[in-house]
Length: 139
Length: 150
Image (cartoon, rainbow over all chains, first blue to last red; front, top):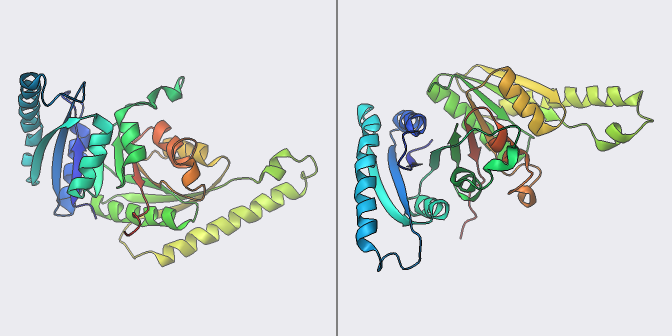
């Protein structure tokens, strides 16, 4: 049922469970997985100013995505790796629409039950609310 | 991570039942089992009223029985699948009972629709799905209604 799966990641190492479940779902449906990193920009003129700075971030991100891609390669799941620039939550939602993703899988934090409102501003929460396709939050 | 047990809550709305159908497909793909849950929410007049001590339990019992019949009927309307399915009816506040069920079973994944009977106005804050997404101890898959055709 899910053939075009998007897995947004940051540059940490906490995304293994999300990648594994995406790989299994893709494998079960002869689908593919796109691993996406959004380089968060700090101004609207980022493309003209500080270009070299953002180029370095992009190279770092691509190296990281290549490493993460081995999880998918090991399961023989077709994969793509993409780096885009923007603000994370809206860019993930936009990109999912652009490629026609039928599922977004992303790592989510565990909620502190003593402070359950603390997670409202997170990227995963925003994507879960705004995305137009099913969203699987892996905790 | 293994997905051996999936929980699919339904309020019997069209969207919720689509999520149940998706959960069946996933359970089949992962070789897991599925629990379909409906939570009977006691009407406020039963909770608030002092005059309902006699009729309240009878009414709730009837609501539970009707929910059980609805769950059975729902399964006959969904595509047949080689999946072990358990039907459960619980009574209480829906999101609390869903979370309690998820913890007690325990389950590896909750599949839930984002637009059930509470509709769009509760999409962002306060819906059953929103609370389940935020508080669940396990992964949660939210299923949305299809986008309107342009």
